[in-house]
Every structure is written in structure tokens, then in C-alpha cells.
Length: 146
Image (cartoon, rainbow, N blue to C red; front, side, top):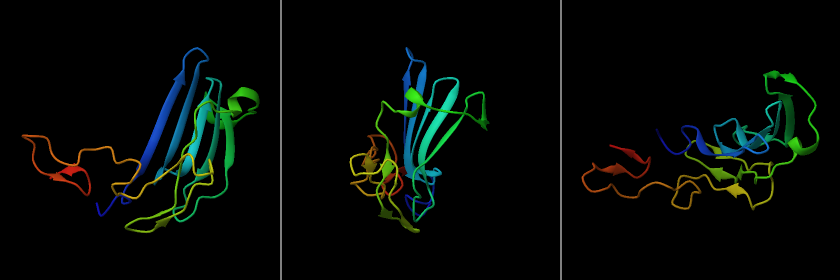
């Protein structure tokens, strides 16, 4: 790998609401197919709102509504399924090792936009910065053991 943007890179949050029998998925990333997206299912329908990942840009928000039993069949979504109880995610614009990446138009605004740039200020900088005792050296650039 030549950098953080040589593969799919981002975050997914999955929330379930067992009482209401709902599932909500929020996504932001590079190479995921979406700059920012949310899906919600009530077991009958799946509603989605997204900004597709076109690399250098992220087109305007679009919605989809399909049957949960056959996601190729469009249906009508209205009411509770079209509102999300969990925050949406999106990505800020950044320059990678291979190209520039545009900011998500969904969800819009800076509050829920994450930084994906492979640096120490990256929103996904979750891993160790040094190997644990007794473990081989760690490649800090990729986070993968050598």
C-alpha cells in the first residue's frame, strides 16, 4: 500500500433499536462508494440518504427506498423511516497520496464531517503508535506489523 488512500478507508457506525425493531447504519469514507451515507431499516423497508463517492467530488444528496425483502424493488418511504435518530457522518475534503477527495454534501455542515488524511489528526487515528512489549516493530505509516 502506498498510503491511507490506496484502499477503502473510513468509518461505519451501526446502531440497533430492538424495541422499535430498527437498524441504522452511518458511513463516511474514501473508496466505500459513499462520502457520507445513512441507511435505516424497519424490517419491511430500507431507506437511504447519501452523497456518492466520486473521488474528487461528492454529488448532491440522493434518497432511496426499497423493500427489505428484495432491495432491487423500490417502494414508498414516509414518516418515521425517513428520519434518523443517530447523527449522520460525512468526510471533509482532503488530499491523499493518489488524488484529492471532495467533502461530503451529505450530511453537510462541519459538525459531523470527519477528517480522513492518514495523519495523527485523522479522525480514525485509533491504533497504537508503538509496538507492545514483546511484539515486533510496527510500521507507523500503515499500522501493519512488519
